[in-house]
Structures are given as C-alpha cells and as structure tokens.
Length: 90
Length: 178
Image (cartoon, rainbow over all chains, first blue to last red; front, top):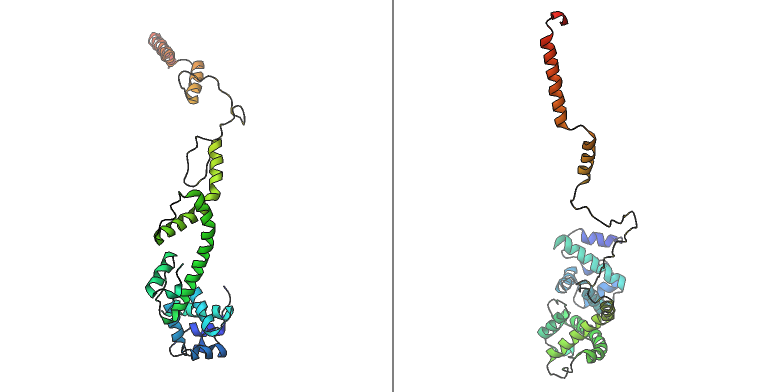
C-alpha cells in the first residue's frame, strides 16, 4: 500500500463539511482554482460528481483530467482520497 | 455504427449496458464521459469485427445479409466466440484422430490410464488363481494346525490319564501315600 500524504490523512479523518476543494489530496492551488471556476468550489461538489459516476475510478479520473488538467498522480490522489472518505463516512 | 453523440440518454445507457457497463445517471456532467466510453467500446469492437468477418465467412451459411441490427450483433457475438474457439479446434481434431473413443470433457482435459506393466516394480505375474479364495491368515492357521495335535486326541488322552489316576487312587489301600 503506497503511503498517503498528510493532506490525504487530514481529509479522511473527519467529515468534509464546508471544506474548500483545495483540501482534497492531489488538488493544489492551480487545480483548485480551475475547478472552482467550473463551479466545483467546495469539496462536497466534487464528491457529488464522484458519487454520480458511481465511484468508478476510470470515469472519475477522466472527468478530473478533462475539467482541470490534472495529471495521473493528482487524479489518483484525489480518487483515493474521496474513496477512502466514502468508505469511512458514507 | 451509431454516433454516441446523437443518441438519447436512455439509448446511450442501453448501448453501454450491451457492453456490460452499468452506467450511472447520464446527466450534464457525465454525458460526455459516457459518450467517450461508448466510442472507445465501439472502436475496439469494430477492430474485432473486421477480423471476425473473415472467420464468419468461413463458418456461417451466408445468412449475414439479413437485415436488422439484432442479427448483426448476434453474428458479431458468434464471430467473436468463433474467434476464441478457433485456436482450440485443431487440437481437438488431432486428439479425436488418435483416440476415437475418447469422451469429450467439459474442461478439455483428457486423461488416459496406462496399463500397469506386469513384472515390473515388484508386481509378480500371477498366471493362475486358486479355486477357493482363502485369505493369507487362514492359510497360516491351517499350516500351524497341521503340526499341532488335534484337540479330540488331546481330550481322549486326558480322560485316559484321569482314569488311570483314579484307578491308582482307589487301589492303593495304604493310606501311606498321604
């Protein structure tokens, strides 16, 4: 199992509430801004998209790449972060 | 080949389902993703179909010209199945030629029993078998019994000795014995 970042661990530790999209693992300032411009300003909105895609990894990664230009690592981090959050809280 | 972009949401979902993809809700944010996925599936299927058309010509009876997309898809699927079956058939034929009596097994694995080699690996060749099957224990017991004195003679001897002792006991008037 690859090691998770501190950001990942922080996010997965508690309900996301009103956390901004930048709180997601893999989403930094640049990607966060792009997502917010498209309307995904809060983490829960990205969660919404994740759930609508039925938590499918391939589709979610494609979508994230399409909307924000995230690279493979960033896609993976974000997916892993959301998946683990869902396993814990959903 | 229908264009995914021109399909309705329901049709798109149905097409994806045909490829075994259980799509989630097709809404604004997911529509393009699913269209792209369907395109990918159609492309990969198209490549298979090009190869399958040659094979289909070998195996089908020329009924491909029937109209209706269902028939086409059935031929596609059967062509795909024949693709997967084709490499296996030459092997099966050879086996059938060599061993015409073999039964077909669902797994395709055949096992033929080798006759045990007589006289090898401490397997003594027994040419004749006894008329009455007697266990080795019985044979041993019979051999031993042949050597021992039969029990009836033993009882007889015992009685004779007993009689002699009794006669002696009675005849000795003298109590000096005791």
